[in-house]
Length: 297
Length: 272
Image (tube, rainbow over all chains, first blue to last red; front, side, top):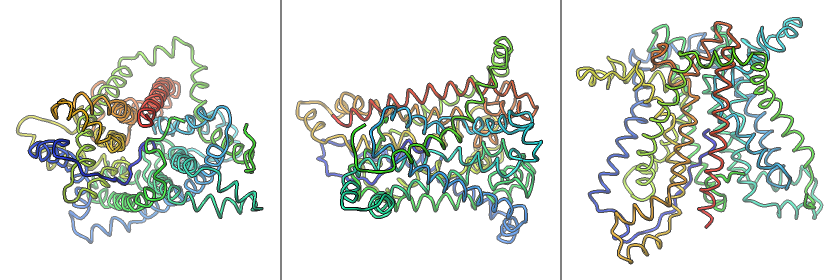
């Protein structure tokens, strides 16, 4: 449900002393907030890296270079490399149709796009088992034709697409709505073709929102655990993604190795946060008109 | 439809509906379709089984407590981040999104390592007989982690939008600071606050990855509903898993609807 909320660059104003709390209350509130965030965010993040290096750097790199870990990394990258472009294409189409045109049922359509945010990841994985599994609706037909989807790579890709589905569309739609259609209309009237309009006018206008959505989508695609866990079958070196590999190592009490692999994902999370912060600065500067809490459209 | 010179409506709309149907709607429809093959009695028997009911109660109860904790601390964090300046404020602000970016499995094993009886915080609590990991407290903790950004991020823009003049007016009419906070600020923030609470709750109810490691997974005690679905799937009890999942899905739909209505309320407030 991450796409429901946005952070954005703050513009602050000076306030008179009577419009804020007494200094003691202020310090107390800051202390409570920072204490809470330290306990729930800083401590876990630090723990990942401390535990990962608990047995020294050699053990750390050994755990990462291990063939099963490399295979898991490769599968994670493959799943993201398919899911993100697919959802990007969808996001662009949905954004264009929803932001540039008026039609009945727009509200319903946007609510349906949000659905994967609301569905438990376990259910997201399970529906593909019900469809394509051995006892699934299409199971007999698939096994007659020797096609494996569940407990194989296609299932993992499908589950990944499902859970990361709304992220890009959710970011693009408000930015496109805020940008309006006049520039595109002008381009058309001046004789630009459809794709020329898209690449020369629309995309430059929404590039930061687009990038932001792609980052969120990638982070979710690479980090998904529940949905992928249901469809994967967890065959080491074959259908294991990085988060699943972490689970296996942890359950085998290979804690240091589990945290070493986790540190790769934590590093990815940190990069995500940094890029996100940079992009948000740009986004706040270019389209201040965009509603910060997305409208219920 | 209004006349427009822009092309591509049919193409983009067609692809949007096709892709949405293929990836989301059709797969989700297998749940009611599969349930329809069960008799009502069998369905009811599955979802009223004490173990299933216990898992629903745990998932809902722990999520409510976690969302409430997030509501309280999220309000303080959002207020502090918007209203006060202190060194490192921007870094702290970026860090709030960590639970969105950190994979749930990583969060799960990390929290377990911290709160296990031999962990950093776990060993401090142990002498007092407080057990966190492998209990309901641990589950709630994991759910606080994953729901943390929702309240903060829904409140931040609303707090920023709060006009200084409104507070000024109240103060000049003789209201004390506490009066301004309770009579002016809190009512103004309330819709967004409730939205943040609902989002945090909705996310927590379906959460799996961060919880399985810290929960201990004891039937009737620390077994959450998503885990029970997986257990049933692994036993090839597809009918049972489907019934449990369908109830959760209906709950999610209701929440999604409520959240969209709440966001409408918040946006209208912001517009006025």
